[in-house]
View 1 (cartoon, helix red, strand yellow):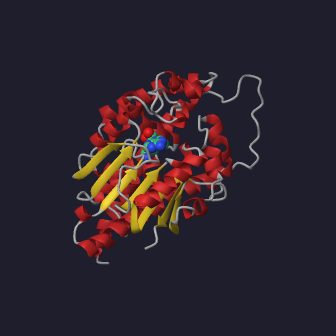
View 2 (cartoon, rainbow, N blue to C red):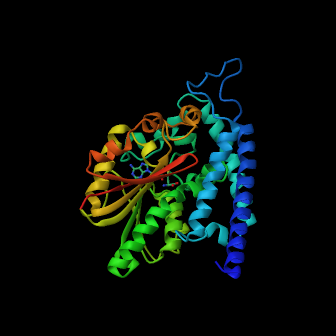
View 3 (tube, rainbow, N blue to C red):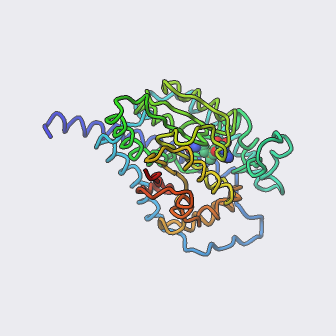
Length: 360
Ligand SMILES: C[S@@+](CC[C@H](N)C(=O)[O-])C[C@H]1O[C@@H](n2cnc3c(N)ncnc32)[C@H](O)[C@@H]1O
């Protein structure tokens, strides 16, 4: 590498490190405030139950956390994907403060619900009847479950606070596999537009935003059961030039057999009962074209990292009725039942991106 290129790389790394440090610092401060608002997870006088597994040391957790950013920088440096859009655009301090205030207000509502019997299913009283029962819950004790604009507006901040600024970087563990596949298909077909990419349970469209930043011409279908979350995804993804936003269930995808080249789900499966996971796996396999790629992104599972004790504690602190069974699910066998074959994986802090391929 020549001197000029070397200096440019060092400057880009400095930009990446400064931006991630600022982001982690910002969300860590709200993590601390949020913990203060929610208070202890046990009632006064109650002795907290020990987790069966020994807690990881702070040093091990910190090493795993920072490795996520080291791995991401290595991917950016190797041009597997672009410097993330969030670190290239000028921050909007007014919006950041507004979102943080909304987060703190919502933390109070979450704290109340977490200490109220039935707080995890409060939304059942107002949710439309047509939605599946497992879906009509206040996952994470959040107000309105998935079913309001307010919930969609505060969700991204809640997730970033929970993971102290690492959530987007964890989702992006899916990007190297997606980029490699898109580039290969472009070489075969000549254009991005001829590639059908679907993000199922897209939420507010965070992964989509990074995919479209790298490949703005892709034909994109963003699917979610929540109208308000889809609207947020649409607003966040104006740079995706050929995108459709479709309100539909993952277990009944609105696509023809064999019509999708690349399909992703991010943080969906741990929110599904085991039976529904199998239905969705079968739908993924049905809609993928032979040879197509599925990138499954979700929580790390038992045995993946040194942080099993965190996985044990998580569903107790938050309303996550299906999380524990998800953390024990054998993914190659779950997707193998539908004919998909493992095709590599990347772990980043508390998230695992696992690729599966539909055989030709
Ligand atoms: C934990 S959020 C993840 C959202 C997004 N993928 C992300 O990375 O933040 C779960 C999302 O899955 C959606 N969802 C849950 N069950 C669904 C289903 N059966 N079909 C479609 N979407 C579903 C919810 O509406 C919500 O937007």
